[in-house]
Length: 204
Length: 195
Image (cartoon, rainbow over all chains, first blue to last red; front, side, top):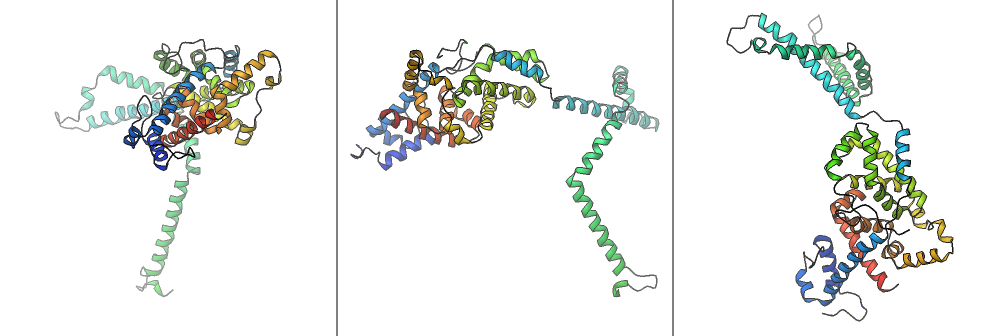
């Protein structure tokens, strides 16, 4: 199975080489994948994959020789730049802050809702008298969490929430739909609802 | 100039130290929380490899130095976004590559970049070095291949990254990486046979 005198690989050989290289596996020893039966009988393809293996090995060895040593002061320069650059607020901090707010909201719900439920006279043994089973230590911890939350937490959040709502395109869309709906209802009411004289106002 | 890396190597010929990998996760967590000392440890482990990668992409020593600095600065600011399922070095090389591409936004400019200014020095040592470089496969690869083919080949065989890892760094599909490697190897085989 020799190639033509022009030294160009035959179409089948090109196809198989590409097929195995792209859809098969050429790492380590025998090439695996579509067309391996052709390779087994084609000396040129065997030679091609052998040359590929040699080239890969040579590239790996050359890479070690081509190692370029970093300047001795590079590490210090990097750290100097890092220390001088202003640190952006980490998104983790916001997540912690929000989780504290969520915990506080849950705690408020527990403290306010359960005692009021127990005072409304649920039948004993119905399972709703949860506060009776709450560990006093846990309750104290919840109260401590609530006390630790800054008093102006909601005030801090409110302007941001309003800002987000103002810029929110979904909210704008909802407002537009609501406005259209109001106009449609108004139109229907004006034209089809009976007037005080008992006649629908469709003649307008 | 062509000295070997002093640090021990793990996976590939240019892989970083393996004994540090177990501590790396905790260092990343601390650095992401703003601990510069922990980040300094990460810089110490990886800056040589990032510099080596960039100096092959950028050619100029000073460019590679600046780009390495920028890479680590970006890494420090975005470490909280780092997916710890990936090796840190792959993420750093991704940042390094993108930083280099932004720096040399025009590919033509990249291709036309002259070699280091020091190459004009006609000293015998420099001439020997130039001859060694001419004999080197990677120098030949740089001449024969496109920048994309070169960087893919470098990541696959010099950094010994898998096809998947290479694809993640250069932003291609795995199949596309295999196609680029196939073409690059063909071109290089042909070029090495007929210099």
